[in-house]
Length: 299
Image (cartoon, rainbow, N blue to C red; front, side):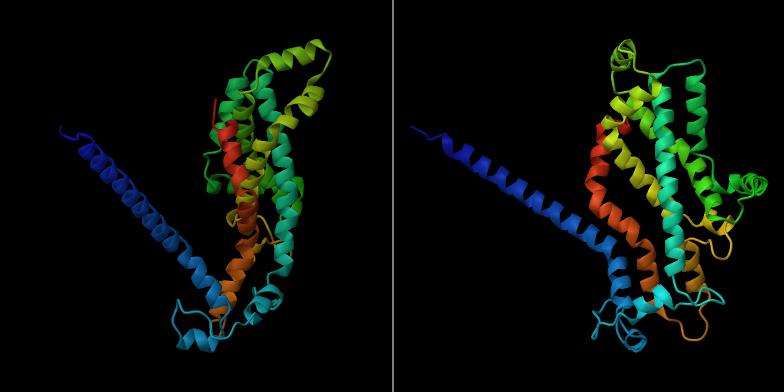
């Protein structure tokens, strides 16, 4: 009697071997892509830890022979951004003073806007939402002149409150979009039941919708913080000496160097300027993905 199980066993074995090979091929490709993506960061980090002599005589991708943090100290408190040599420190705290209130205000107002548009239907709600959505796609350069005129009329041109105002206004389209698309997934019957029980507009928002909004709040905070912290155009256009954010100071450090080019200081300054957004994504990156899949791109 012929054994028919042998060909089937061989086929299964070959199939399993093929799947393992494809899996390892995928891992190798992912590792190569990760290496390619992380190589600039590696070069920046190693260069910032080298002396100028080692940078001139060594390889670009070699590890430092002697680790030195002198470039980091200079970038933080001694690098020249023009005629002043205060490093990034004062400008770093300017960015903190700009980003924190701007993120808070744009998130709060965006949540209220999204709540109104999604749950409190009124005449023209869709038109208003469409106009705000259209505002998300207006290039920064288009609003520079009218925004400068408005800041001058308000008397806050060149100030940190003025930069906060700019980022809040420009971020409202995105925050409203995020919260609106999240709130439309919440049943309208929940709002109707709360109104029957006597709850008002703010009570429903504070007691029902806000506790349910943690995933989309995380998404909005990460998005807004990244956009505001990394902004250069608004910072250089609407600030003056003493109120410039860290991105403007970084540009000044890199472009105002005279004499010997201190690449280690430039690299250290770039890492310091980008470190807060990197930490935000490392700490809260998984919550960002969860928030997106929880409904922020639905509706």
